[in-house]
Amino acid sequence: MIGGLLGCINVFLAMNSYSLQISFHLHFLFDALRAGIFEEIFFRMFLFALCLHITQSTCLNHTQVILSYFIMVLPHVLLHNSFSIDMMSVAILSLLFGLPFALMSRKINLLTAIGAHSFVDFIRFIMLGI
Image 1 (cartoon, helix red, strand yellow):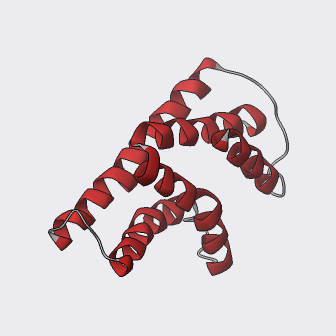
Image 2 (cartoon, rainbow, N blue to C red):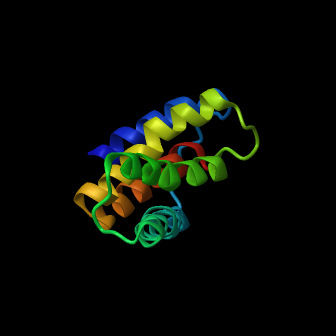
């Protein structure tokens, strides 16, 4: 459900720059899975594991938790928003997309974050062709 909601929001936000080109190609599914799996493993699991390694603890204090979320969210958002570093766009994308995936990964499990992320990308590919 979260992936579907975020996918619709993603398409709505992108409609300012792209027109709807609804189509289905099987490679959209594989591209979405590839992006979801790689990005969630690298940007969430690996970077969170790096945070735990740096702090040498599995129990983070409040400040460390907030910093770990920044570390898990900002590089991913900057990668997807590399064409312009508008702070408002970075903040909105971080709150709408990066933070929910990081929370899913940390609070539920990595597979849930991978599924939601892949679904968001799949919806974007089908609706916009990008």
